[in-house]
Amino acid sequence: MSDEHDRRPDDDRDWIDSVTAVARWLGLNPIRVRWKLEMWRDRWRRRREDLQTRTELAARPQQACPACGRLSDGAERTCAGCGAKLPSRGSRLVRRAGLVLPEVVSLSALLAIALLAVHLRLMLADGGSILQSFRIETLVRFGAHWPPLVEAGEWWRLGTSIFLHVGAWHILFNLIALSQIGPAAEEVFGRLRMLLFFVVTGVAGNVVSELFGLDAVSAGASGGLMGLIGAVAGWGHRSGTGQGRELRNRMLVWALYTMGFGFLIHADNGAHAGGFVAGAALGLLVPARAAFPERLRGVGLAFDLAGTFAAGACVFLAVHPLTEPPDWVVFEDTATPVSAVEVEAQIREYYVGLDAVCREWDAGRKDEALQKWRRLGIPEPVTPVAPGELGALLGEVCAGLADVRRRCRELPSKGISAFATEAALEALPDDPALRAELVDGYRRMCDTIPP
Image 1 (cartoon, rainbow, N blue to C red):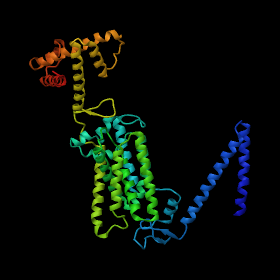
Image 2 (image 1 turned 180 degrees about the vertical axis):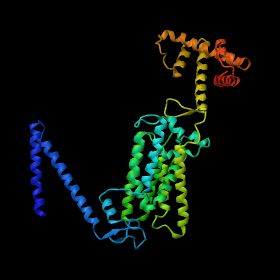
Image 3 (image 1 turned 90 degrees about the vertical axis):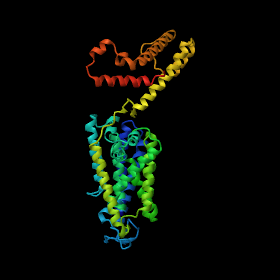
Image 4 (image 1 turned 135 degrees about the horizontal axis):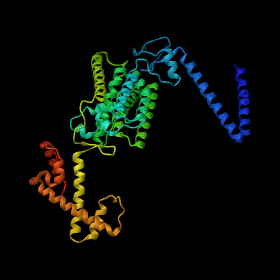
């Protein structure tokens, strides 16, 4: 064994010399190439030796209980201290090699399948490419979190939004996080309780996001994932064992990464923080699966089943939305829908400013009127206008405002004919409901114009 180890540096030197010679022939810096190759060789050797050490440790006859940290014989399947189930030798080998592999019937794997199924449903409805983000209309239709609709009574959006994702990269990052965090939460708290914590903390995160003043559409599983991170970190801190502290520190790194990345991409960090705090509280208060009191197991099972039902209901509502966005939701080119009330408020604000401009114009203070008009943020005309012609253009705008005011005064007596020409009236279908709807639209427009 020692002879073979002694021969390795010479063998490595042979191939390193050969590659360096080729690099010199190609015109590369041979010293730099040699330094890089030796660095990669040493790094690979250290990793191989570390893996060998981990494998030898896993083969030892003793093992530490994941629930209480007590040492037990390697052949035991339950801990003598707390009664927790001990992992098999194969599982210990995988974990000590630094890997986390979900079990075949892992709830984390089933949750990932559910997230992908919902994502596929949105892809079919949206009609975009695989890598393209969904339209805001699609997200709102299938249950994304938007405070005005939640306040209007669609409270189920606090849960369905946990199972929606904006695009391919969004769900990919969350699935990677779930593959690492979910199995740890399952091992500590149990499969069904992991799912319960995911839903409860995801909803809690959305509630906190509303309290922080969310003013955009939000979706994603990261609030629930932060809840699982907080729950495992809380349990690790409470356990006081070396393994618990290591798990806690690993979860805290995940939390800091998620929050930092959220700041970079302007994600809903209110939901992230709310989910983490809710999860940490659960982790500090709820006993681990192995240490759960026997007298409360029935209550715990009832909550677990309720969480499973809630998750299933959220997935069903996300795939088969019960309602369409109401008529007062208006979708603009921006990433956030607005209500008709907000649109009317914006129009009213513009007309109030324009009214002040035209009062200056009618009073002969044309320079002041032009300055106020520019401060309104009016976009430049499509056809360039010379500075001397802006006054004439503003005069036409103010004359148009006066004409609209006159028509609004005539609307109660003349109806639709106050705005429509005779030719337009003749082209309209003879439908009283349609004409009444048009009159109502003109009335709402007139309400935004100062008298």
